[in-house]
Image 1 (cartoon, rainbow, N blue to C red):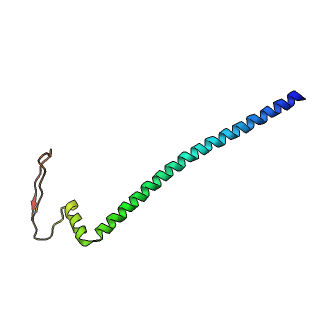
Image 2 (cartoon, rainbow, N blue to C red):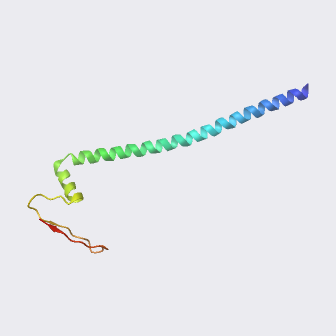
Image 3 (cartoon, rainbow, N blue to C red):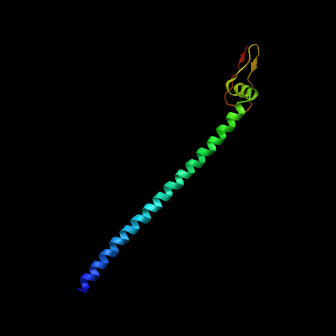
Length: 98
């Protein structure tokens, strides 16, 4: 009778131990997943703030024109454009357009 009680108690302890280990492992995994989601959220919020600042900047027509000229070689009709290539450049191309 005593041996049966000890074996039963041992089985219960093993069962409880396995469940505790399972819960601890699941908590660790969920904690890592939460940290990853929080990092992605922080990056997304930073990207949103940067895009909002750029939107505000480009809302001003003067800034929009400046960016168009810099990024896309935009010019007004009648203007001439000269592209100056820095001296240390490996490829050199020049263009003059009317």
